[in-house]
Length: 114
Length: 112
Image (cartoon, rainbow over all chains, first blue to last red; front, side, top):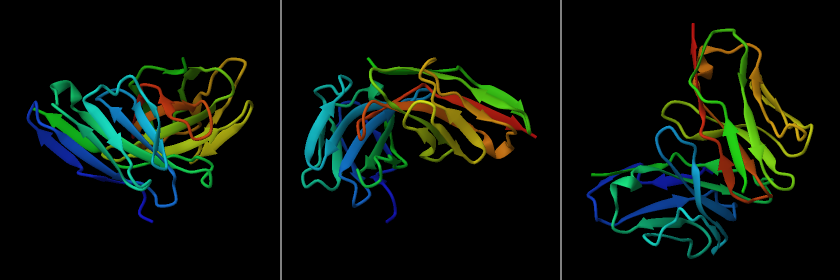
C-alpha cells in the first residue's frame, strides 16, 4: 500500500471556476477526512466519512463545497465558484479501527485561485 | 468547544540545545493527544501520541506527557539536531476516529 494519495498536487484556477480534488485512502481504512490548511495555520477540519456516509461537516464547509465518497473508497472534494479566499492546501487523511484510528495524511492538493 | 493552543514561533535553537514547545488544550471528556511534524515540502507525519492521562508518548528522542491536571501536552527533546527543523503541530481527538483539532503550529529552526 502506498499510503494516502491525492490528485492533483497543484491546481491553479481562475476565480469563479469549479475545481474537484480526489483522495485515495489506504485501502483498508474506512474513515476518510478532509482538512484545509492556509499559510501559517494548522489544518482545519472540513468533513469526514465513515465508509460512504458523511458523518460530520464543519461550519467552514460553505454551500460552495461538497464532498462525496460514493462507494466508500476514494473521495472527491468539489469547490464551486472558487474565490481567492479558497486558496489553500487541501489535505486528506484516513484511519480505521484496525489501525487504532491512527491518521495517515496525504501530501495534499495546493489550490491557487487567481 | 474543543481547542488546542500552542506557543507562538518561530523557535530558533542551536544544535544540541534543549527544546520545549508548549501545548495546552480545552476539551470535554478524555481526548487523545498528538504531536505531528511537517518537514519542509513534505506532508504531516505523526510524531507521537498519548491516549490517557499520565501517558508519555515518545519517538525519535521527542517526548510528551499527557497532563490532565494542567490540560497540557508539552513537547520536549533533550538535544535537537539540524534535521529537526520543521513545523510542529499539537492536536487532539475527542473520540476514537473523530476529527483531529490542530493548533496553529510552531516553527522550529535549528542551526549548526
